[in-house]
Image 1 (tube, helix red, strand yellow):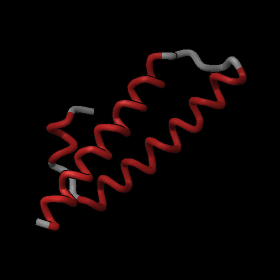
Image 2 (tube, one colour):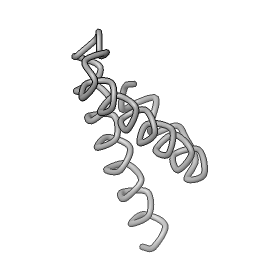
Image 3 (tube, one colour):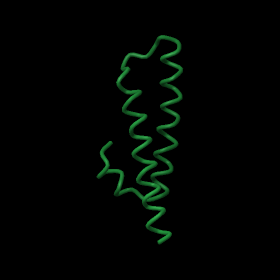
Image 4 (cartoon, rainbow, N blue to C red):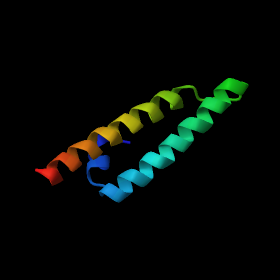
Length: 66
């Protein structure tokens, strides 16, 4: 997911996407622990997407507050 794609989302959509990514991250951790994880790069992608969404969500909140 690119930052330009994330910036076009609303606050509610960002929250929903964040919850979805957190759930995927949880599942990936379990897959890694049990040795079933095939795409190890996906863990890094999900982690960065979560950080990207949190950053943009926080900047939108600061804009709304100001």
